[in-house]
Image 1: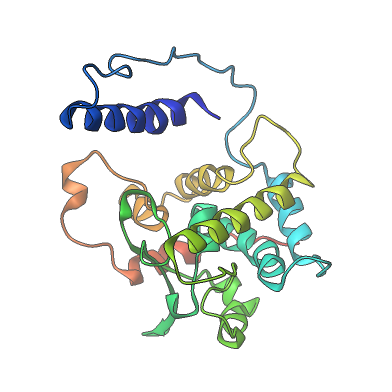
Image 2 (image 1 turned 180 degrees about the vertical axis):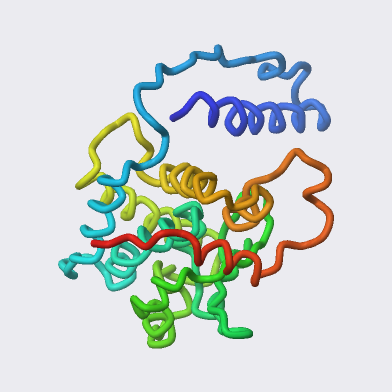
Length: 247
């Protein structure tokens, strides 16, 4: 478990639980108060994003995947989620939770809606991302339209939040394991590296920062970025510049 997770999630949660104990006269002090995790800076030995060769290797692996003993939803996730992340810079968790109704055709564009209503999105912020033309040519919309289940890449046992979160975590982990079959370098994150690569390529293409952030869902510290909207047309125009992956 990362030090960041322990600091921002685990200790914070414990601190809140113990504070509840104090507020309800069950404890006299908060044992988690003032607890801090020592900051240890990891040595960086390579770029954070996938290299050209790694990206091509992963997408080739996904394209050539044949269904084995895994469920249909896991097979679909391994086949499509790497491609979706490559062309959107989205988090893997945001893609594995896609539902059939989260893809629509509007004004000549195929648009994905990433929403916390489906499962989990960081900061609980929804956003819309047009499909890259190559994903349309690869027949992703047709694949979604043929899907019989609500969730495309996971199969929750029930509609409860617990079941959905469990299925979400399982599908996410299966994609991670699949990527690790071909990119074994422990210095690169098998999921988050797509986001770093997307931002790097976007900078090289001189795509404006606010449009890049609107596509990837990154938060901006610039107050001016919170004014107005980045239209789907603007996002689609930027994505049209994004080079295709030849595998």
